[in-house]
Length: 258
Image 1 (cartoon, rainbow, N blue to C red):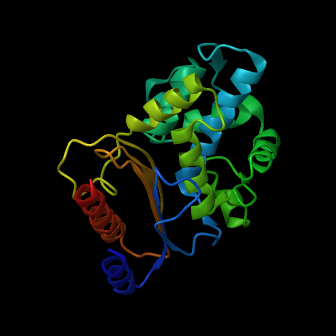
Image 2: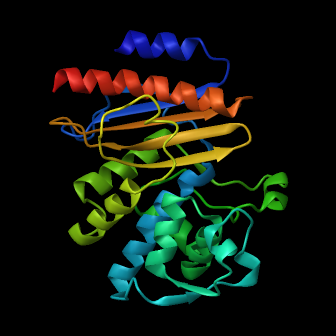
């Protein structure tokens, strides 16, 4: 498996970070590449936001069904909430849309709900030293000034393992996070070449030269975490195909082991 992964990675001209973890082996990596490199998170930043908001609600004993206003400045194009022209939504709805369609309006509302500074403080508190929010979604003016949302492969893998092991949140909130991630509608990277009906709790991230996908594959007997993070690519479909090919190698390995 390792040779197949390495051979495929060496064939592409872009930068690749990769992490593979067997869920049965805590704190151990099956395969890694540049897992501590800091890179643009794109929409992967929505996973720590999901965890942070659920933690906030637990600590404050507040309802996930409370209604939140959608400020006009948080609306962006290509958003379900923007297209529906709704003026408010429950926190549950915002979390679901933020993950399953990567809704950027929902994300901006949730950033304001707890505050960017508080979110970054929470990230550091749970050990995400390099994961940070420096701008809202689709704020390209801030991006041009050098303010971007950042993370690493190691820290993303840590988050997904914590969701799987229910280490950060309560059992109820951990199961809710996993359920929302399992309803992901964007399936053209990690699951691209996998025909089997396997449950995957995952999140994608995409910008002009960035393509990411990381999640938990609940394969028979051997659940595992895989994250592929591509930067500096020039063709989105090629990058997604590449992620799919790496994922298929890993899936076949764990299927064979099972």
